[in-house]
Image 1 (cartoon, rainbow, N blue to C red):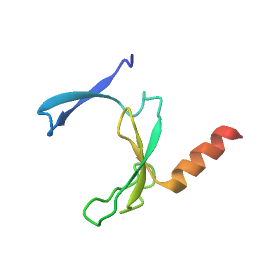
Image 2: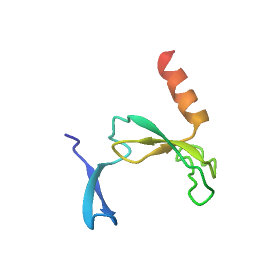
Image 3: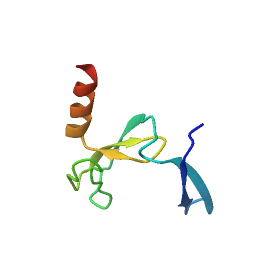
Image 4: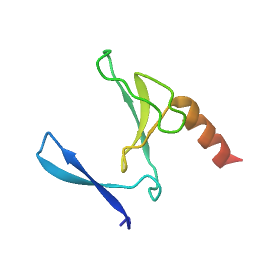
Length: 78
């Protein structure tokens, strides 16, 4: 269990949801994309955007663009 958590209000369910803080999270990213121009995301690392495709951490809702994902992945491999 993560030691520090934030609580976000889930409007769909009307309850608070516990999520990990960004600094203590062991990120696990999934791809989010949209087919319209109503929903757009900004990268939390380089602030690039707005974008229609972004990587979101399943645990803390941290967002990364494709460029930042490639940069962090390549630095982990070397």
